[in-house]
Image (tube, rainbow, N blue to C red; front, top):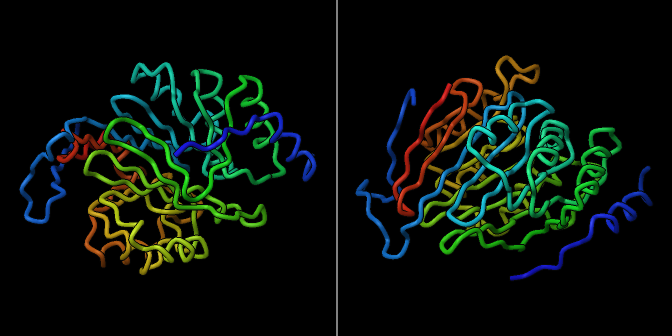
Length: 293
């Protein structure tokens, strides 16, 4: 499904009206632990949960397009990480919501790499970081799409992304304005929950069948404001990744979230403990988790 792109300058004008290999664990997605390849699902993919301290940054590689979701704070290391991968062009960049621990590092990404499209919830924030983020998108004339539930992007022959949230986001609660993306990579599914909190989770629970995923990026760095039990049970992930900083001042991840994750029998990985977490998906089905501290 094709959606019209919104030219950034028009959006900026509208906004201005409002405000001026250490360890490897092998997993199988099949119930009986027998790894098999679905005919035709022969693509390989890589999902990088980049250790950017107290923030989010996820990079997904497919044979055709790549996707960056958030970039942590400024100088978080995301640019250096992508340079080390020999990345020169990023097809899609998602800024899930305007908080600095998600979009500030994207400013450096826009300066360093050619970017095909930015997807953003289109809510305003009165910070210098947000203004610089928008101005840098404008500087490089990057196509800007306001992301809404139901929008889809094809990433490769057997990979695509569907937005599950938001529908009608508010600038008064930016975490609940988060873009939540469900990414299908062959037979493996990944849910990237941004900083969505309980209100946003309840909206998504109206269609729980869309949430089921093999891999979960846990919402809001493992905060107890997110990851309610009903939401986690609907996702039912084999692997859950928490992106948070070592000894962060918020106490993330909160113990009740860890307890709920343990209750659904998911394997937990954390960037504050494990560093960069890289999941390789081979032939659309078999995947491995690699820890790079």
